[in-house]
Picture 1 (cartoon, rainbow, N blue to C red):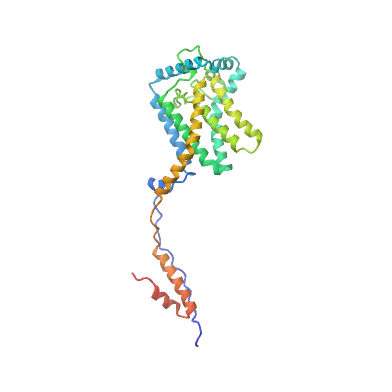
Picture 2 (picture 1 turned 60 degrees about the horizontal axis):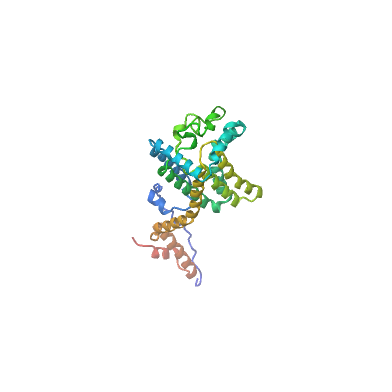
Length: 317
């Protein structure tokens, strides 16, 4: 009958042919698809590897490191700014001050910093990438200082009467040994001649600035400001750092803060350049499915036989 529309036979779209799982992306592919919020673990491992390498590079330069430490003391004496002397005498004479200071030195440096990083990731996600890059960059600058200017801490200077090693004095009440804040038996894994700059104070300043900037409660923000001040007193009282290398640690953190923004913008431009590729080719099965859907729509409008139209429009090999 004229005007009658032929029934349309609906066929399922062709299934995509079986494909093997894609190969694991190589280094170049990962760089092309790099985003600033990624590579957190890789950056941390890279910094640790660099720290371990700095320990090896300083090996054999112990006498030079002690000379640098004595140089800092002479500079502080010239500036009439050497609070580490009376702080060390105070902490070594009173165990009720020395023991808590030892625990603070041996624990908070390794606990508060990752906790602040996790807090930024979970609660301040928009600022996490900046904070992480800032920490890594400041630490990298500090590692350069460790290599170029190895410095013995006050407790390891040639004159044993100048400073007392408070942590060694109370090693029997803590998990650390007689060689700094490392656990008993792991002293060889630390760089004892990495006093300049003080990353103990530098990391504490990084934590304090982030807490003060991003915490909502006022008392938490106040604690953020007090934390680096506490670490400053502790590292000098336990004879692990000088005033000048603490100031140097704060300097590398502030310098890292200034360089983080430009570095992130440069990384973003580099990532966009590496990701500039040609259009992704469309698979044959997708073209076939699209062709059949178009043919079905045309047949419905014109009353033609859909399979015949689809066959006419099918691509020819």
